[in-house]
Structures are given as C-alpha cells and as structure tokens.
Image (cartoon, rainbow, N blue to C red; front, side, top):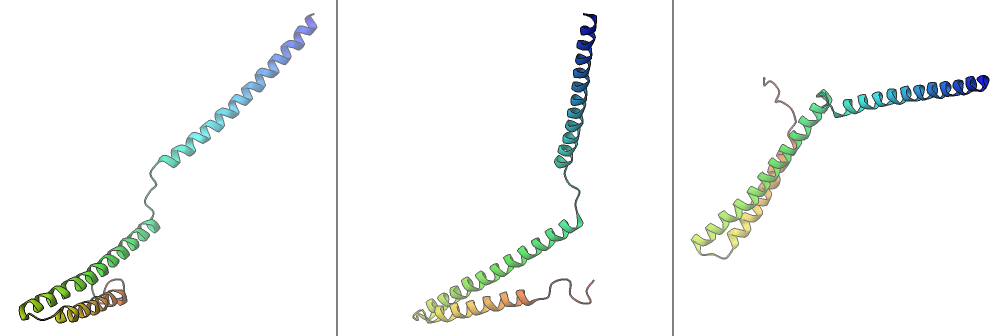
Length: 126
C-alpha cells in the first residue's frame, strides 16, 4: 500500500503543479489585459497631425459658413431694398425683381471671391 500512496501523492503533486502553472498563465494574461485597457482608457496625447487636421477642418467650416452668410445676406437684403423702392414709387414689383436678380449675382460673386482666394497668410504680412 505504501507504494500506491506514493503514486497517488505524485499525481496530486503533478495536478497541483499544473494548476499553479495554469494560474500563473491566467494571472499573466490578466495583467496584460489590464495594461491594455489602461492604455486605451488614458486620454491620448495631442498629436501634431491631428491638431493640423482639426485646424484645417475648422478653417474650412468657417469659410463655408462665411460664404453661406454672404450669399443669403445678399439675396435677402437686395429684394428688401427693391420692395421699399417699389413702395415709395408705387410701382409694380419691378424693382423687387431687379434687385432680387442683382442680389443673387452679388451673392454669387462674393462666394466666388471667397472660394478663389488663396489660403494662408497674405504675402509680406507678418
């Protein structure tokens, strides 16, 4: 029987060693996973490429908004002027139509000027 007990003890020791190795492996994997999660959750440092892209997109949005405002302003203000002139002279909506057309042309010219202006600082300015 003593011989059988030693065999039984060896198997238990092997199982314990196997469990210890498995537990160590799981602990190592858990530590790596925790480190990866910590890296993901930390706010990333500002990257110069991202900052430049952000500046360019904000600049483009500002330029688009300016073009929109200038076009809408020209198309709204010019017909109001024409309508007021029609009211003063008691005419049919002739001036309203004329000023509406002039307002649309002025708005398109303003948008064209904004779109064709070179980007960046003007030459010679500091």
